[in-house]
Image (cartoon, rainbow, N blue to C red; front, side, top):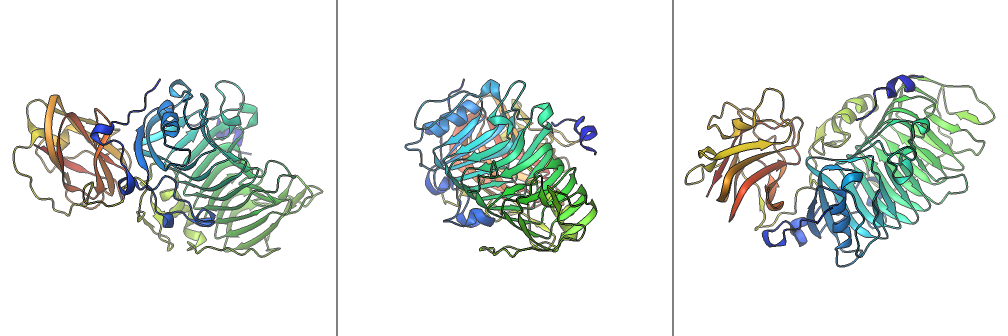
Length: 519
């Protein structure tokens, strides 16, 4: 098997800054995170999954700030969107007091509802710190990386699960996340995505699960058959030993996923589980569908899948592979609408869309990709807070403060060959690009400067790439404006020392030629 060699590569006090006075907390429609129609699969059923849509938006760069945001709500069900940027780890995570139950060593979404946690800006990484959902509902987790969560060794978190759900959880949408470990149980890790004890109506979409002994399970034992109605679509499972997933009882739908390097077994339907398995691509793997490690048989309906260099072991007393010619042994009815990419293009589509920091790109159902119609980091349009400039942008009046003698610039990781200074050199022929499709660029001054409008100009040939964005007072974290598309952005005049343009989605690598600022 390849796992041992591949895993040698490895994987990659706080006060919540709400800044109410300057607008970092957005209310009502301004902070809408995800419309009900955004959730896909089973998460769209049972009333739908909207997370914190309609509630306040707050910013967090530490685990302590996330916990404080959860606990400082008016009630445990008050909608909230928590935008996260930076690395969340044991060093900056602390239990908070208030209307919720939090902990020092995990992000605990316990006995709460109506919450969105989303990565923004240069990205959010939960490093060695798991996310635990318990007795909770209507939760959205998007655009984050959770890595190297351990159950043994040090530090430990969440029983070794990157994301785990248990005890009467329903309606959770996990989308565009990257989950990874650096080994299996012997190296201290457990699983990447576990659902148990009556967890229902969950969708895992456009996500990557990599370098782990266990991908995930539905039901923690053969007597725990209460979890059901799970959708997995457009996910990448890579270098996983088994459990992709392990389904005990219940119903699950797997479509348009890319499985590569399933070293021991893949979709393991057992104890009466019913799996509908459509248009997936299995590559360089073993025993990708069947009932394994038990005689408690499960069921599957298969169609449109491609098996590329897949091997199958022999039938045995506790080994029941569906191949080498997988055939359906049941039928499974799916209650929601969905569009299937042809399996032949699944590797290409999933590679381009799955995981965090991919601009929330999705499939168009015809083997091409597109930007989402309502990305969670774009507030609902409002005359007072949202701008959708048209290209080319008009020239604001007055002096471009970005060219003043005391001005400077910085930002998130930049693409090779570009410079932060290119956005304030007055030359449309030079530009800054982020290292991916999302990132941030700032203009700063040595002292407070009054600003009421900016012009963001894309370089020639790249107009239209920039999707959703936030304009932020970097000193306070206040979101001054949100919208989509480059151009001229106006807002009530504010005095600040640094202003940041955060690109949260794009149709390709953005190129910002000029970031102009005006009083």
